[in-house]
Amino acid sequence: QVQPVESGGGLVQPGGSLMLSCAASGSFFRIYDMAWYRQVPEGQRELVARISRGSITNYADSAQGRFTISRDNAKNTAYLQMTNLKPEDTAEYYCYSKISRSSIGSASDYWGPGTQVTVSS
Image (cartoon, rainbow, N blue to C red; front, side, top):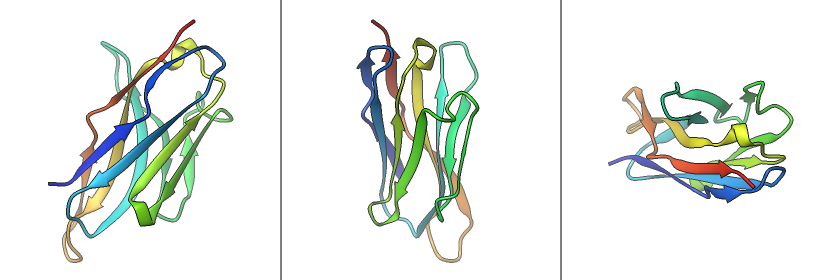
């Protein structure tokens, strides 16, 4: 069973910082793209930041300049460093990974269960 699992969410004051981690566990061959998405109740899941296996990144406009995505391929882990957090960043944050389970199979999409980030004073 391949499963990305997020950690690091919580309550933070406006202007504060938080780092999320996403570790992929299970048996697989390779992780390709990894990304962070977020979703508010009754809202659509939206891309926050994405990183390729070679560490090429792209960000949503709302995250540009405040958030940094990175990854450690040796640890099968992606990170999202969030700074200058705002109340509108409050959401459930989900880790996405594109993973191939074997050297000959195609890659599939995997999602973590999510971690809540609340920005409030």
